[in-house]
Image (cartoon, rainbow, N blue to C red; front, top):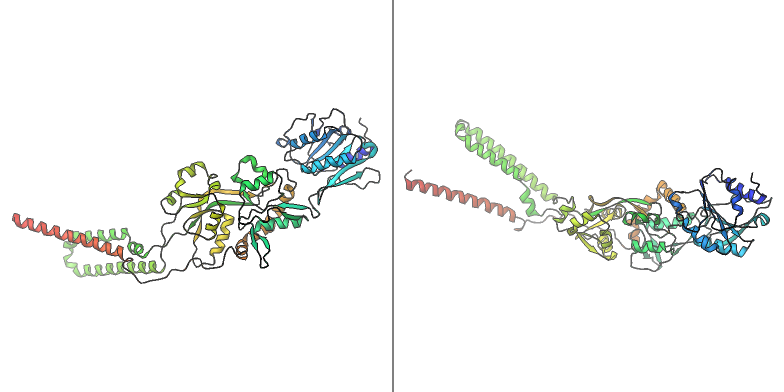
Length: 544
């Protein structure tokens, strides 16, 4: 039987009442025995226990999930190296509940140094006790927000401490949240208001701004004056990895990076497809329409009727009036069909056959304008087989400028979220300029998230917040305001982008195919006439 002294029993009681605990990790690289070992047998509630008495790293995230309690016994002289080893073992688990015992008498300055180191490593749920804890009855913790503040709790009999690990992320108390807008429009838009002051718009900015408001934080834009340049995926992820930003105002496709880097993203904010927006197929010109008014099957049908008539006309000599009446009906039907199609084509011109695949795209003059970085994320077989269908650029500004102006010289890659912007822009036009083709998709479903530091304490609250945005419909509402934000920022204008079809007088150019067909028919007739003359002369000379 293990007899636990009063302060330790109170500590055990606070630990045991936590219903979220699922496992315990005891880290003891120090040679001396700590008081924490005394509570392993009584405070664990038969939970799985892992004891590690080495300074070498242990990859805990491979077999331990959330709800981990860490008990660490560290020496006075080597606490920093030992704590660094613990932080490496807790990769992706830095917000676990931690109790650190230092093998030294109570030292407030040492406790502050240890806890400041924990804050830098994102171990915000760390507490420190010393080897004389039974006598001092003191435990040290800290407040992370708005800035580091050492907090001391006493385990006296009249202590009001009821919970050892409050959620420090529920109220940031005005603490700074560093953000990094990538200025990828319409996600985040940097513009000048009527007073000449710089402002940021966009649905991604709405998400970040409301997150800070919800958790009582204050935003700090670290690249506020980065005008005229869009940050790419590598730049944003590098800033997050180096810990220079907490939550960048930048949504990036998680399928664009290696699988092992998924942990550098938040919970997916959106699911989108990455497909192609194609220029709407052009209308047939008049000369093309006139040549298509009557189809080839129609001419073949008339030819068959004529051949049948020639074969049987000698047998129907008694029904000449019926034959004449039949020809009149046929002539009326053919004329009505021709005129109906002609008027319909001229009033509402049909378009050329739509592009349905990369193979058919190559046969046209249209090419997909995209970034080099995005091009190399496309499936290797697809991009090598159809490399001729793409035109690449290394400058994101070129792509954004052409795509936002709806330049119909090219097709463009776009996610379903960005397509909503261009679809809304074209609603003001009498006729659309582009259509979104799901026949030419490079990623059917792309999870999109915020690049964040891999051990960020914002991961869990951001996860809950994103789910609430989905359930409330706010995310969809903010995305739908993309076009109005672009108009407000002066990036787009409400206008008719494509004038309606205008009728004009037929010209020789319009009728060239008709004249060409007439000349071909006339040539055939003259050829047949000359052939008949030659046959007649041959018969005459031969005496037939």
